[in-house]
Image (cartoon, rainbow, N blue to C red; front, side):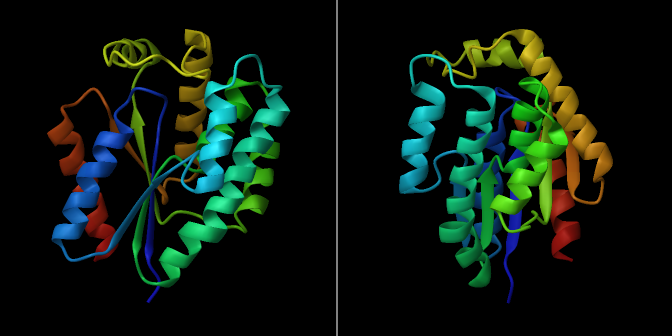
Length: 206
């Protein structure tokens, strides 16, 4: 039996991790074996790449940044995601290649099409069964991030315009692939968001 691949997307501060954790608990209650992962950093090699991408001092050239993200993703898919799906497990990932298309393609003003092509090659064409896009305006998301008390990483320190461009890119991706994307307003409560996500997932599970 082939497993189920679910990804969570959105700009920083929209609540992806919270919703992914709640969905994992729900699926486990239904009897599914769930692998919960994230990008970058879902593997041991990925943790090293994550350190370079998010916590290295100094700038990283936009094309180099895009390639580092795709390198992490290629290893992540080959060593963790595909084997879990082959075993019939549900994989829930906090971010996948749509993040690179939005963040590096739009936020860094690279070509979204080129970034997508690089990543499709890196993952061997593996698409999620469902991509949940949590949507929130950039200013509200920034306020939520500042309220966590955690020091921002290199990308989280970007200007508001960067996140506005990234948000618009995510929405454009969702509009282009409505059968894969499920857009949820992150202005709602945690419980309201989760109820909508579960309802959509139940349609997928049949």
